[in-house]
Structures are given as C-alpha cells and as structure tokens.
Image: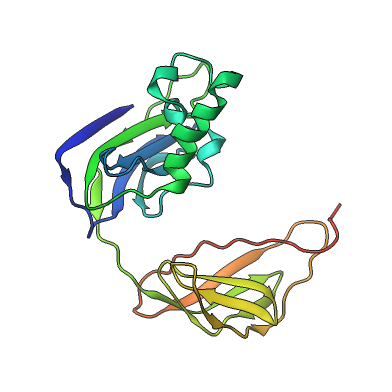
Amino acid sequence: MVGREFTPPLDLTAQQGMGVWVYGDGQGEVINIQVQSPAHITEAMAEHYIVVDFKGWRYFELIEPEGERFEDYRWPYDRPKLQWDKKAESADNAPQHWVAGRYGIYRESVSYGAIGSLSVWYNNLPPGKSVTTYISPIRALPLVSHKLVNPSVTIDGKTLTFPCEIESGAYLEFGSMTDCKLYDREGVMVAEVKPSGEAAVIGPGQHTAAFASATSDGLSARAYVSVITQGEPLR
C-alpha cells in the first residue's frame, strides 16, 4: 500500500470523481484506490477497484464507491490494527472483522468536504509471479448530474421501454408490466411507470441482454443494471 495524508483535509465536494491512467500486464491483479475522511468525522472508506485484465495503458474514470465486491478479497483493514498480526479466519476475530471492515464500507459514507487520505492497495496477485503495473497521477474530477431518458432493456431480442427520466442517483424497479416504480436517490418512490414492449421469458442456456437510453443533455449514459430471474429454478 502507498498513500498520502492531507493536512488540512481536501474539500472535494465539487470533485467526487477520479481519473487515472493505468498500465497493466494482464495478470488479473486488483488496484484499489481508497479515499477516507478523518476518523473524527466518519470511519467510512470509499473504495474504487480496477481489475488489471488488460495490457498497456488504459484510462479509467472512477465514480461510485465499491460495495458489492468488497468481500471478494481479503484486506488488512478488515480488522482493527491490533488484530493485523492474527489470522483473519480465526473465530476470535470475527466480531472485529465485522466492525472494522464492513461497517466502514456499507454503513457510512465518506465526507467529500473533508478528505484526509488517499491510499492505493494491491490485491489478487498471481502466486509465485511478479507483476508490473504503473499508474499516472490521480486527478479529482467534477461530476455532472443528468438524466437517462426513456431507458430500455433488451433480452433475447425482446425490448422493454420505460417512459420516464431517471436522474443521477435515482433508480427504477421493474417487477412486472403492472409493477414498475421510480425512486429518487433517497429511496422515496416518485412515480409509477408503465413500461411498453414485452418482458422476456427465458429458458436454460445462454442469453443476451442490452441496455439503451437517451440522455437529457447529450452526455454519455451510465447505468447499473441488475437482472433477476423469477419462477421455477432453471436446470
């Protein structure tokens, strides 16, 4: 791990994204760029993972902090510093693992008005091999709020279109043609949405899925799409 502390803390309220160039060797290692606020403000950790499954230089823009993949890897800060010299798998460390690691990821949010440190961690290194990775200076980038307009999801050629505008941070949940709701960034339902098209019915085997949307201001669209199947288990 390498890092830098900022005294006084940086005010990144208007620059919560990050841009960085990475030179990779294609061996699958994971770079974790982590920002934290001083502990007296919050113990949250905002992590951003880059999987080095490519060779040569590649540019990344990092926006949303990680959460889903946190437990895919072992990190020394899973546990309090007093426990770092003990095996993470030991039973007596289980409570500390929960408190020190997961709470800082899932329960709390970094205060971007006071960023006290930036750290770069390395993980998932190939056993018995050396790795070569370079990173450029990490730049703080401003985020632009915009809207996805009339998004659609296509599965196996069948398209569902949702006549709505999804603002940055908001989300849409589709349960059926009569159960589709739009929520704001605080999780408050703001509208019932009536989709058009046909919902896909899938069977065993491989399937293709695609997402499309216009934007309110011509910016590149970004969305996180989760697809969940319902019905009898597929064999």
